[in-house]
Amino acid sequence: MKIGILGAGTWGIALAALLANNNHNVVVWSALPDEIDELKSTCRHKNLPGAKLPRNINYTKDIEEAALAEMILFVVPSSFIRSTAKKISPYIHDGVIIVSAAKGVEKDTLLTMTDVIDDELSSCGVTEKYHLAALSGPTHAEEVALGIPTSIVAACEDEEVSVRIADAFSNSCMRAYTNTDVLGVEISGAMKNIIALAAGINNGMGLGDNSKAMLMTRGIAEITRLGLAMGCKRRTFMGLAGIGDLIVTCTSRHSRNNRCGELIGMGKSYEEASSEIGMVVEGYHALEAAMALSKKYEVELPITEAVYKVIKEGLSPKEAMLSLMVRDLKSELDT
Image 1: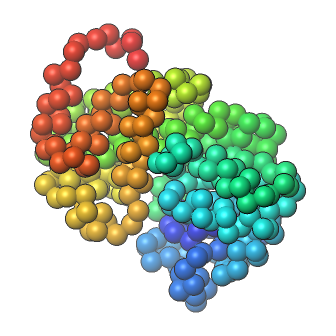
Image 2: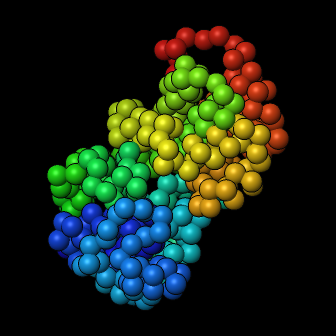
């Protein structure tokens, strides 16, 4: 299969390496010409130490070249999904599979990433028929690039398409599952980054494993609560895109969201923390949309709200934790 990858960050390149090793014809595009030049000359990514990239990956500065493919992966930060969809819109052709590997919700529209792509392509007058899908799971780029075993979920309303995507990614290091609940997979991917910020703040405050486990468990409860109100399937949140991705993002040393939260818990501002990390922290960008979804669907998201108040309103982490601990008592079954 010919596969175009839009975005040459760590996740885009990790996926490119996996797909190239599966003998697909892979073309990677980046909006940053210097990034393409470096990848061509070194066959390495500066933020993927130890990962030697396959020589059969093609790199391009021409987005049309990446678009001439059977499958196109959007692997740019969520805030650049719409502008990237606009750039590629003239080159969309009938039957192409468009996969979002980005995680987020657009602040102004409250659209998930596949819906943002669809909305922008429609606004640009694209009339060709295409398939939309989402890719998610416990898949830190640093480990995928090294071939460390994990699983991923390919979500598309058309199950035959999700099977094609899963087949393209599957090998002895990547076990792919399918799902038709695209919205549930995307809501999981966006919301778990916020819970990972909370888990990181917990670490930075010097609190323990008990409180982190509490935040993770009640975090998946509030993500599920929101997803069900939006019409998603409960099982999705117990799967790879839900609890699986939440666990790895809340516990891994590779997690930018976890590390950012840790720095905030140690007393740094978000601006200081994100500057130190030097890469996009998606949980921060999801906060306003999450609070808007909470209001729209009348669903309580106490951990999300606490993180919002710490990062956006200056509430101290200690006060935020106290606010969670003194909430009214309720049954665990009432999620």
